[in-house]
Image (cartoon, rainbow, N blue to C red; front, side, top):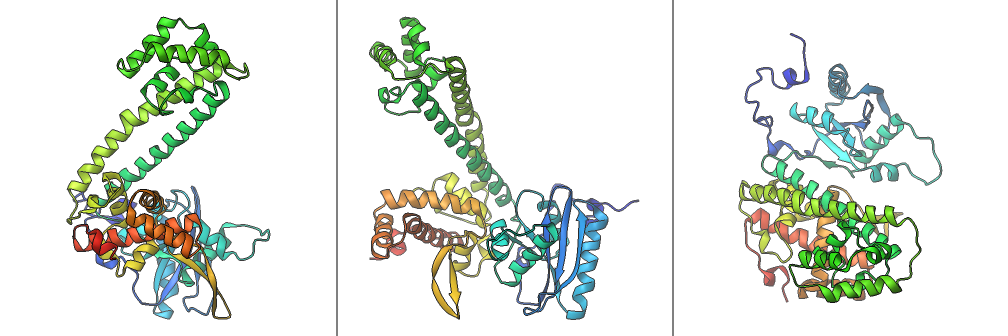
Length: 438
């Protein structure tokens, strides 16, 4: 019988419902040993692989080759070549992937199930390793070499596949964040269109997005031309039905008056009205059909976690925020220190050095999970505005330590990451007095 990926990983084809049954979380973090790095620049059909000398002071390329993606003979060559090159140095082959796009995942999961160590770097780290900003010729083999170089500089991180239900929690929360961002983009696009065709429309409502405004958009009754052409009874009925009788004649009269006095250009009224209708329908579909389903799945995963957690006791840590944090964190036992968790969320500053002296703190490293970093930044922004302890910390960093707005928010986010990790690791409950001692 021919060898396949599935047969090589599982010759008996048993327990197909548990593909990670051989997974051992204790072997995940990289150990203190000599590694032979292999940088891999993945693409849809082909990958560039470069093996680099394992000794820290050597940058020699031992072997380089273009291989096919998702092609078993090339995958076996990658494993055999790594073992052959590592043997004279008594080193362990390590495969480092750049995580741009989805193309790195098949090889990474394949190597992981064979218990081979892997690590990842971001595209930003690879570009930074290129050196100066002058125009340089780009090719995949050079990019693969730079990926290995990032590892040798100690800036990569070991990647981990979390067990269930944390793996599902990670996927649900990432999709939730995607649709939430699409919702924000839709709202911004709707505002742009409304301001172009009816600048004073939003002034008549308490919120720009509410059932009444969405109903008017779906009935194409936002453009002044369409409002003036509509029957007064039709406009009133749409408003009453959407507001459940709370609004009616007075708002209809205000809309009619606003349409008469609006400063607008008669540009493509039909197309702009249709665009607003479609955007309103898309917004409602996301919020009424997609997000509730994802939130139900997130809640179910949180109920089935293999450890006890009380993160929802933290202000602004609802189920989605808690699910995002735990999904991106994985198992708390993977991290030895709180600082390593902050680094995994990419909230640690990168230091610039010259002649062995610090020249100051520059930008964030932005290593690790971009999804967790984004979510914790948004939570930290709420803390800096509405939670007294968070507001005090933000003002201290902003006005005493003279950080930028984003820098001060990131300090608050790092504090929240430390606090949430300690609670998840210890199974402890939230205590504001311990988190922010006076």
